[in-house]
Amino acid sequence: MTDIKITIIDRDGVSHEIDAPTDMNMNLMEVVRSYELAPEGTIGICGGMAMCASCQCYVESDHDLPEMSDDEEAMLSEAFNVKDNSRLGCQLHISEDMDGLKVELAPEDL
Image (tube, rainbow, N blue to C red; front, side, top):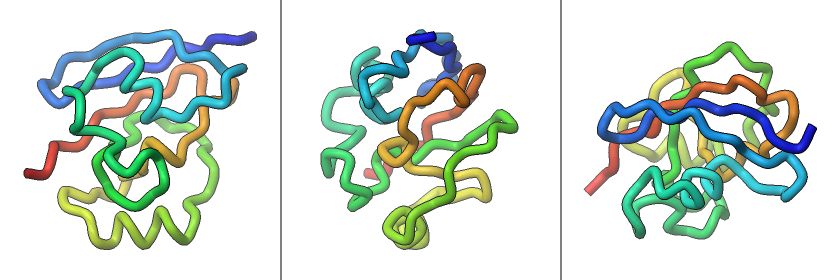
C-alpha cells in the first residue's frame, strides 16, 4: 500500500477525504499544504520544526499514534486552543497505520 485515506476537517468545518502517500516521508502538515486545505502562510510557518503551533490539529479518530516528543509537548503547552486530543501535524509522519485517520485543523491564531 502506498496511499491511505485520511479525513481532514478544514478551518471552515468542511470535511475532505484525501489520499495521503505513505512512501514519500510526508507529515500531516505537508499533506494539508499539498491539498491546499489551509490558506498559504497559515500552516507550517516554522517549516515543520515543532516551533510554532500553526499546524495544530485535533485527532478525532481512535488511532494509536506515536508518542509526543518533548518538543511537541512543549510547543502545545504554550499554544492556544489546545485540547486533550491536540497534536502538531508536522510531527505526525504518514504511515499505513494511519489509514482512516480523522483530524480537524485547529483555529488559526491571529
